[in-house]
Image 1 (tube, rainbow, N blue to C red):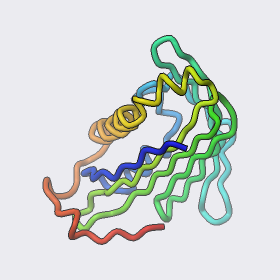
Image 2: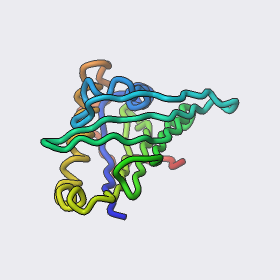
Image 3: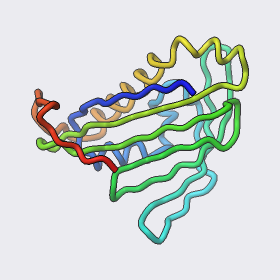
Length: 166
């Protein structure tokens, strides 16, 4: 399955960025292509994690689709995993990891994989996969800039940083 993976430093705290990505109900306000979002189930688990079933309505030009996902949120480790339940995809998964850097800023580790069932949709989106993922990350950064205080140094040597993986 085709995949887009990106690591990006953003000058906001990992807790703020985790909170922003966890706030799926607000996606229609700032995420490109998302027209509506509904949380069908929202369960607090005994271990402090949370599970959601969410339904998104998305649109691009003349295309309108709806799909459902299972969202697993782990605030302690700042991890969000999304898996496909139903809709126009053969498969869909995305993963967010928020790593705190030495200056308090965040290294986001983002990965999305998807495969459309419909051959026309597959052809339309195949060439735009990386651009669409970049637009989505840009939208989250812009919304974080609007909502949260900027932290960290303007420049940081990422090669010198040590990041724990979960």
